Length: 259
Image (cartoon, rainbow, N blue to C red; front, side, top):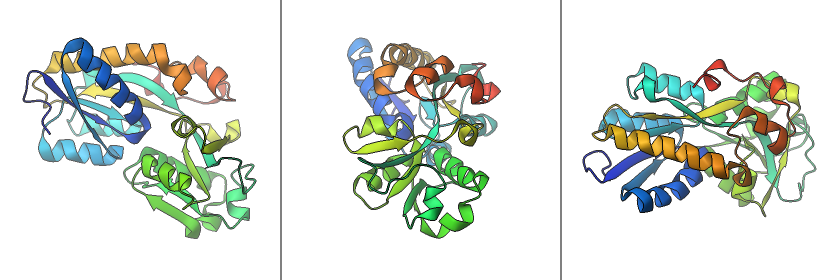
C-alpha cells in the first residue's frame, strides 16, 4: 500500500473512532478529484508507530488531541496543518435493551460484569476508560474483570458478540451498531475533563502536500454537512442536541477550541 509516492493517490491513517467516516468520504473524494485513497486503520498509537517505521503517508487522523500532540513532538506531522475534526465524549455502551440494567459507572463495580476497554497505552479511549474508573473510585473493584482489546473498534465488536457485558467507549458506537447497542450516559461531572477532539494533519513524509491538505479541508466540509445524522459533534454547541450535556459544563481542552 503506497500513498505518498504516486501523484494520484493518498495514504490516510485513521483510527476506529473515525474510520467509517473517513472510508465513506474517501470514496466520494476519489470520484470528485480522481485520487485513489488508501486507508490504514488501528489504534492511534499504532498509527504513529507505522508512520515512524515506514516514513510514509499523507494524512493522519487522531482519536484525541493528546496523540496529535505526540505526533507533533515526534516530528511526524506539520503542526501548521492541524485541524479539529470532531468532538467525542465517553459513555458506557451496553447490548440492546441493557440486559444487565446498568444505570451508571458504579454498577460496573457492583455487578459481576465483564467490562471491555481499549488498550490504554495506544488507544485514547482506553486511557480515558481507566481514568474514568479511577476517578469514580471503582477501578480496584473492576480491574480483574476488565477485558482489554487493541482499539475501540475491537471492543465494540466484542460487545456486539456478547463476549463482554459492557464497555467504556465513545458514545458514537451506538451509530455504528444502531440495532445492537444502547448507551448509558454518564453524569456531567463524571465526564468533565474527558471530552476530547479528533484532529487531522498532513504527514511530513508526504510527496503530495497540497493534495493532502485538500483531503483534510474537504473532509471537514463534508462532515459538517453530514455529521448530525451520524452522531458526530463538529461544533461544541452540537453537544446540546446529540448528547445530554451542556458544552459549558464539559471543560473542553484549549487545543480543541483553537484550531
